[in-house]
Amino acid sequence: MALVFPNKFPVLSTDRLVLRQLTPEDRDAMFAIFSDREVTADYFDLPTLTDAGQAARLIGRLREGFAKKQSLRWGITLKPENRVVGTVGFNYVMPPTLRGGVGFDLAHAYWGRGLMREALPAVIEYGFRTMGLNRIEALVVPANAASAGLLRRLGFRDEGTLRDYGFWKDRFWDLTCFSLLRTDPSPAAPHRSGPDGGQTG
Image (cartoon, rainbow, N blue to C red; front, side):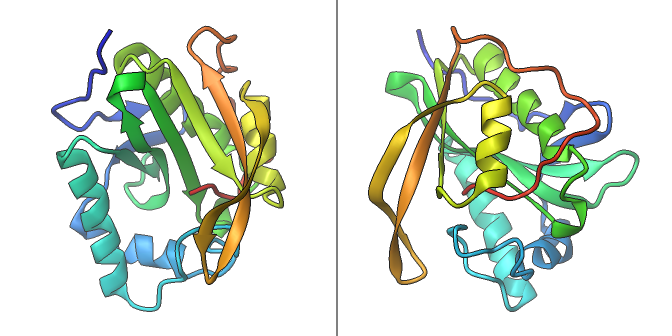
């Protein structure tokens, strides 16, 4: 078996959302998200942005990751708008082991609307069915109850805590490892309600 990484950036659609590639035109929307300290809380490994140029460089890194077939991060937009309100996707893919690491974030104003509960299953399905992943994992700071709860509702299993596994913002962080296998029960279908919010990587 071999990992199938897309040559053209895929667009995913759910009831309320379109997931698409980030573009330079998304700079201001990305800056609005990541200049908010509610989003870049201590347990998020990205510093709070202080100028729009940082957002532009972040978009550039995410686009480069796709071009190099190392990562695949979608911008989350609401239908029929085209404004990015968050991101979701694979921070890394490991072709030899058919493994990918998922992360997600959402603008604070959109927490609690079930948007990530709708977006993440579409990404998971794409990873398993189209890319051929066998395992999808996520690393979450134990205090990040919202992200951990979302992953559990989608069928991820808690595999335990990795002590001092992450380092950002001048300190080490314990990280809980969650995983979902292709052979595990399928994630529940997207819906329009239920708490979410928070972020992971």
